[in-house]
Amino acid sequence: EVVDLPGTYSLDVADREVSLDEKVARDYAHSNEADLIVNIVDASILERSLYLTSQLAEMRVPMLTVLNMIDVAESKGMLPDAAKLGERLGCPVIPVVASENQGIAALKAAIAESAASPKAAGAEVRYDDALEEAVSKLSGRLSATAKRMGWSERWLAVRLLEGDDLALGLVEPDLRQEIDAWSRTLGEDIDIMMADARF
Image (cartoon, rainbow, N blue to C red; front, side, top):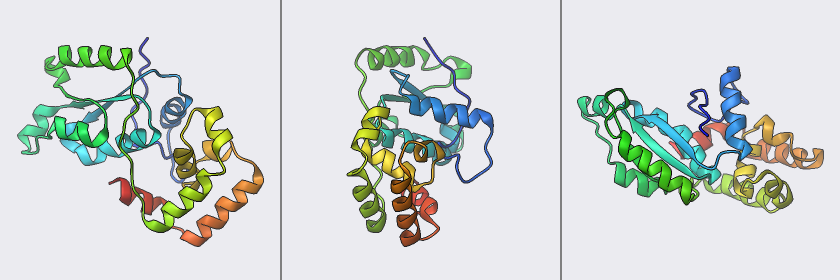
């Protein structure tokens, strides 16, 4: 069964105006209902497209990344190295030109192989020391909640520090106070610090 989610460039919905479509995509990605996420990115605007990819990799979900519009990227002189990108992300990366039906057979084979033997993406974003300390200390208190949601403790801590409403709704008020304290200590630019690390 294939669930086609609305397009989005990020799982962040807390600090900006977002559409219902973006919330639907965020909530489904966090639901753990998918055996495999097929993450389709536009190879011609790769930096923008890979922001969501970095978040999915941080989530440690089984993922396959599709580099679509590889022909447009090549015409702009920026042909990505799919094999090297796959190594960095810790998941298969398949180049395609969907409009021309190029690479579709390889994509179907990769989906079948990944679905039969799903592996979590292996990339990890490293934040600056102060943020890593906050993530580490919060992670140690999130074991039961993270397990209940099927998330890693690290990912839950990251989402809490980012002010994600879905994550904040999972924890007790006393922990929310601690998160507020970390936010004050780290300053108002936590989301910018995290975005910089991902980019």
